[in-house]
Amino acid sequence: MVKSKILYISQEITPYFPESEMSIISRYLPQSIQENGKEIRTFMPKFGIINERRHQLHEVIRLSGMNIIVNDSDHPLIIKVASIQQARLQIYFIENEEFFQRKFIFHDADGNFFEDNAERSLFYTKGVLETVKKLRWAPDIVHCHGWFSALAPILIKKVMNEDPYFAKSKIVFSVYDDYFSDTLDLKLKNKIRKMGVNEKDIKLLEQPTYENLLISALKMSDGIIRGSDKINSEVENYIIESNKPFLVYEDKENYVEFINDFYNLLLKPQENV
Image (tube, rainbow, N blue to C red; front, side):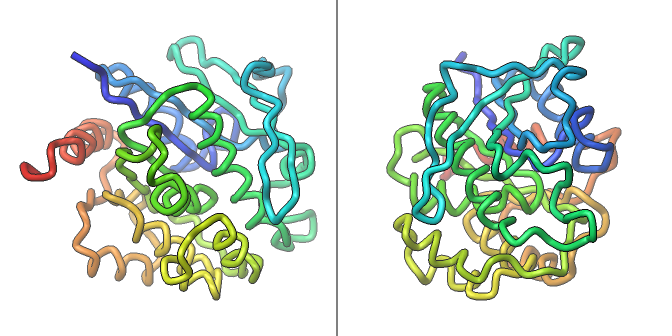
């Protein structure tokens, strides 16, 4: 029997990131799904706070060396990997000195939202997808965690929809309590449109707020998971009205079983769902 392939695109994973609901799920869910007989690949950004020596990161030369175009500029992509030995789990890291070497995540030392967070997100998600293609690995499900991964569903459904590696991929998006009040770069919509996305599919990004970014991602998703008990109310209202397959919030004792079943449901032939 052919194993189902699950791609995880996460914003944060412990122990490389401080513990949070998202980082803990992003760490243990892939391990458990792998133990349930599925094949997995897991990605996160190589933020500057990550200690490479302590976590024994090393560059994957055969995957590095690509340039990712963001806003008409080439940005070098470096891929690093680390292993969580006891879990037999590998984590791939997307690295770029300009976007990720800073010692802060999304805000500077004074608490200001980085002006290039939209470009950083676009580089990250595009970098993951291009790396997966280089691995010659076609995921059956792409599971996104956190707002920083929210551009991936748009790229998969509207830019890579005819790509043999992603044409049949189902997208699952987990919504967490990761709200930000700032607005992303107002040029984000035009940057995505230049990649071949129809303007009507990203109309919400004329005002690239947290709510509009997540709703744009959820519109492109095949299934939605509530990753936190508390989530943004506007996003929650969209989920309810969308009638998309939806998995309610589950505590840490039960979520793996329910998510694995959710994957299996989405992977059934359409007429049987």
